[in-house]
Image (cartoon, rainbow, N blue to C red):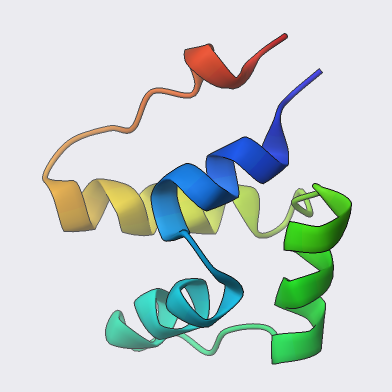
Length: 71
């Protein structure tokens, strides 16, 4: 199992910060209520996961490891 909620909190802290992060890269983020559901339910849709990983990589200058989020 992938610990999506912990990944979201570790890398974006809050839904509002995730939305701001995506916008900072000139991408249209999902609606706020959608992102709030990701955090509350601990899920991350498959279509958004690679986008967030790519944006984190661009922001940090290197790949982001997800190995620590696998149970």
